[in-house]
Amino acid sequence: MARVGDFTLTWGESLRWDERTSRLWFVDCATQTLHWLDGGEPPLHTMKLPSMAAGIALTEGAELVACLDDGLHVIDVDSERVELLAPYPDGMHGRANDMDADGAGNLVTGTLNITPGPGAYWWWSSSDGWRLLDDGIGNANGPVVVDHTLVFADTQAAAVYAYDYDPDAGTASNRRTLSDHGEVGEGGGEGLAADRPQVGLPAAKVDPVDDRVD
Image 1 (cartoon, rainbow, N blue to C red):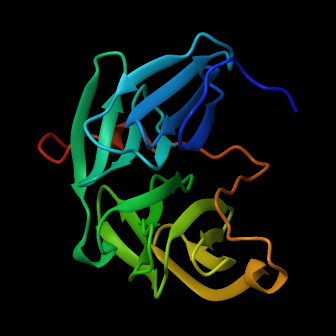
Image 2 (image 1 turned 180 degrees about the vertical axis):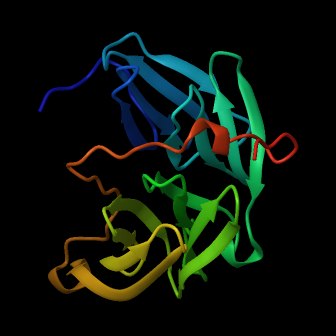
């Protein structure tokens, strides 16, 4: 393992490697900034955001989708455009935390809770909007989809769960515990990654709510 660059982050999250552009994306939640490295190498590029971005997902276009304070937003760093894509549902219990694209044109995300509180996992698509995947969650973190399996961490529960996942229906069932860190005293799950590249959200599906392409 080797350090990349000499910069520091206060609260780094949501690293995403884009194979098409050879660009490494990540955010600093504490400073409300989006960062990227071309070729995965310095210099560090930065864009200030209007609120904290916790989760980001790639698209098949030049844009990203990010979880900001009031909903999902489309971000284009070339034009410095930030536009609302979808407000959060009431059952998000506030704002979303981490996020991932599922390879079928949908997003999975869930509630951010710094302190104990109600939370849930959610699915979103441009055609069908929001659907509840599971509730009774503390702090949603690190979703990742591989084939028809969704893996999600609940940091407050110190557990990592797996579900049978249907990306087209927007459903997750048969929850089972992959790891219970509370029993072994190793802390809660924070970020997850799969060893298989995930397809981003198609560009035609990330137009803002006021200018959506069907």
